[in-house]
Image (cartoon, rainbow, N blue to C red; front, top):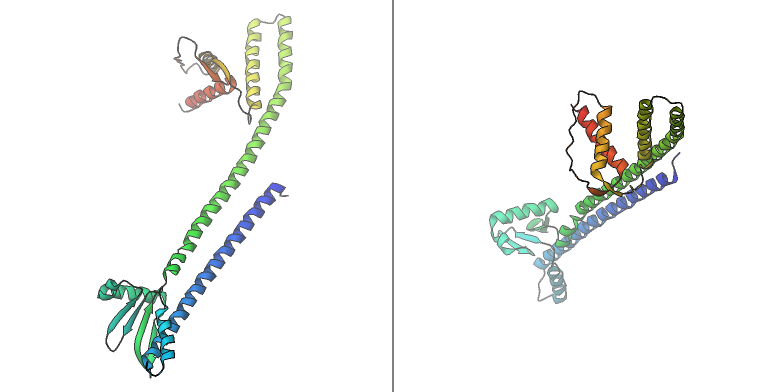
Length: 296
């Protein structure tokens, strides 16, 4: 059964996916609506251009003024107007140098065709002019918004994944720390009995060498118990002689390792005091030496 933390995490992920999907859908709808409005605006402009070609300005001043206002209202949409009879290209909201240069003009026309279908201005069934037009600056800016949003979404999901992995790793670390502490607790009970048995053996006048070796092993078990009990806890540092602790770890490893392996320890002659946790430091030394032996 899923616990509360897991349910909360999945709810957060699903809610985030839903919100991001709505943002993407609304962005797409908004972009589509803008393109449709751009198309409608250019069709109105083309109709006005067609009417302007037909009217007599002296006879219908009101209509001509209205049509001129429509024609002059396009201040953002880039377009190229091609007049078939005169074979003339006229640009609006486009760099005139590009319009005059045949190569650049053709390239620009192809770009406009890829964005919108050209509009033909006809009169009595004859095509008089063709309007090539493209996206306005605002649409060009908005069209990169979905790509930027996708990048943000990817980063967002990476953050969620990192959060999930970190949370999962934290739970695992807590589990291992709990197991280590429980192991230390379980070892502590028989260890106390062993200490008592060594005292009995001393009282029974058993060979002191045997008792000494047992005490060394008991001391070793105490060290292991302390190490396990410190897993997951903040180490407590003490100002101790690191040379002495290193020498003790060296002596223990040398006595417990095959005689075929030669040990050589180079340390300063005098004491060297540092802030250190003796149990964890000796554990580190032992692991390094054992890894070196295993690699041989």
